[in-house]
Length: 137
Image (cartoon, rainbow, N blue to C red):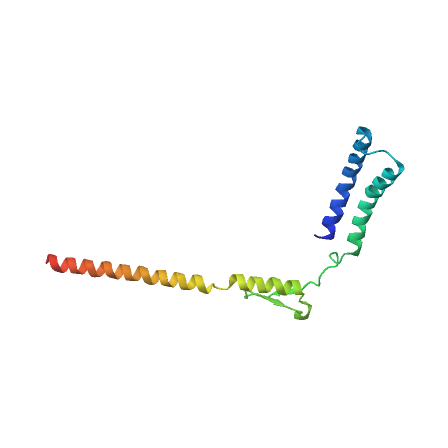
């Protein structure tokens, strides 16, 4: 779970807890004592503060170095100007893309076998039609 999600959860949970505490006090299911008032105040105020602390101490807000690309006229590929600034996240994305775009050996073999089967069936049909034509003449 990211720090932003935790902060959002804390921001929405605090008013809900406050409403539940007030409803509990009014219905008499949760006694309205100084201890319960202190606990609910701590939860209502501490939730958003904890969310702010999560965001302030997270490393998500640090931006990754950007790669500069130049598009050379007449070429369809991008050339990285600074290959040293490649981040681990970018490297993982490139590995995934290369894996995804590579032809699947199993599927290629299956398609090839299916193609060979179709050729065999067609060859049998041609042979049968040739025999039938030879018998008819």
